[in-house]
Length: 380
Image (cartoon, rainbow, N blue to C red; front, side):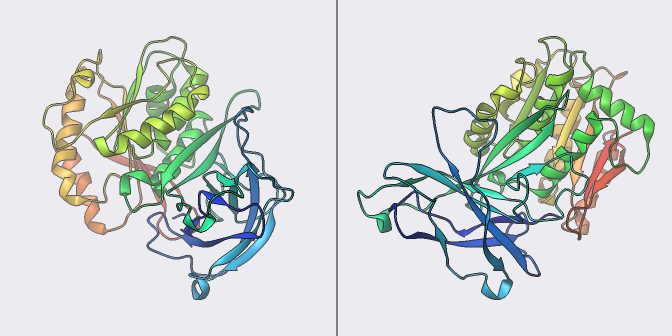
């Protein structure tokens, strides 16, 4: 499992350019239901906001130690010194990290020790202004995290993913999304953490990273991190302009999903590698027309953390069966599942998928900080 630094009390959208701002940091699991059990140093830095300057990732000031987070003081309000030399009218983002070396605000999806330390967080911009009442400013309702994806010739791509601070489950990053994205990076580099299964790996690599046309659909995409990672990686390999990466979820997820695709558009070289947000409701028996119309069906069906609601399994299985029927029987799609167990009853999905011809094989896992690992399963 992974732990995440976030804001129990976020900063306001506006503050006076003197004194300090007050926040309450949080260190907890993906759903913020399990606080970190121990002491964790938390560092702060500031990222200046300059709309006229395009950067691949935010530049930050030198990190400074802010506090040591413990459960015993989890609700303590912490004053944060303002950016040095801040002037009226400037905007900055507050950055909280678990250490102060290198680029601590970047999550490296290629790291084999991914998630050993809690993941960093960036606030939304804070406007420093002497006008108005700072105590009347709205509290922020969104955060962002930045992920590094290694590209070719030593270059890196940086994926920015926005999340809501509300309790809407489809608007947060979940462990399996990060774990599966990391595993896909390793698969593209041809050395994933694996429990063997070389033939299965070869098929999965061909289904997602072949230079030929590929059609890929993600179910239950949430914030879109898996599809964004796939799009960035496929941009290295895809030769033509044909193919799709469809990133699907319920209507309620679309605004955030569409935003995350848009802000990362520089990573995608063609329309075929740019994820396409699309409403796909498992409870609706007929697939959307644009999904049914995909020529020759899909090469890969990708899912991460789709098992938290066992009541949805019959609808999910029906959706999977419908997607599989779009492909020729001689070339069924490769199904890839990122999974972290939250309840043993979730594994009944494996039996249901067997009934529709999907035999899932565990091919690897991402350990993170301990506890339940993110498992990667692929159809044989």
